[in-house]
Image (cartoon, rainbow, N blue to C red):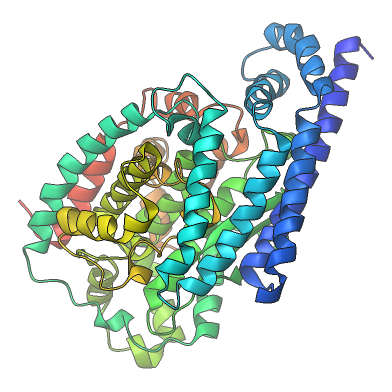
Length: 505
């Protein structure tokens, strides 16, 4: 065995240990978000923090840096897209970020995030924003301190954005969002000027057991492998990966709203399909995961919206849904149901928002977290600022904080900054990638109308999923589409679909 091969093997062993520690921490978080009794919150915070600190210490060990230095000539001698060159390159990038963050600080932030999440699960149902203020203030302080480990930034949010969407900056995202909102606002105005579509067929009693079974049947048809994954219930839907053989999703069911649970399930299945589709050869390394928040979100939005809110999908699955809920939907036509699931309205809840208004919800959150980081907005004033932003941008304001600034878990169980931009960027990319998929596999819509997804899933797995994080998001977008991120396909998709539904000129 050559010296380079030996050192590469040693690097992989060290990285697998870090991966296993992070996965163990993810199991602890999954349990907290699904089955853990509230009394376990304090201890769970310590446990999660301990795992985060140990994983960080092992990753930033100087021996890892020495291995990366020694392996740099090997990386330069190999093709850029080879697994080994990519592993050395991406690990170097992540290592150089990680060594700036003290393990004790990471443990402190992890423990605080666990406590903040638990406080949110108790405060949101009680509509008690005041209870969360101390947690959010500490989160804001910790988020600023985290950014300051990366001096030289243009905007304090840039390092935080960089964690989720490598290479993106505040100025770049603001430019994209300005162009996007400039196209969306007139479309929203044109649609909401009409009488709203009737969605009462979705607001009947749909038993939880049958909802879960129908959703699981659908995502199994998508390609979600239940021998390597499972679905559970939670307060706020999410997907998590423990290994290539254990990818889990958690959904939320409301028995008086079919759309909430079903589209949460299809959304999270998109994340899971991405993770299950990563090349198993990358397991145990920093490459064995999706490459960015925006790329990940593009997949959840593809399967939630482009596929499972599309007419071809329901031409096959609506008769199955009627058989599952004959009393509720037996006399409801496909046209009525299709209009109901694609109803556009000025709504309050991001996760329930329609495709046309959804990105505006994200842009509001993005600007609010920038103001908090800049010091222009204090946590105690967040509800008022939130309500004002919603009134100005969507023409509607919440009557209670549980439907306003408390609705999303991100700031309560994570950091403030870099938490939301990926959702809107993912919308843009979902349509951009889908256009490319149709060029390569024009039979995709016909297959979907027959309840088959092999062509679409196969194209996504070959062009996106299998690469994991070998490439940055800009690199992968260029490889797949031949150009950079482009809002054009997304706007065309929305105008074509909703122009037909709402008879727009």
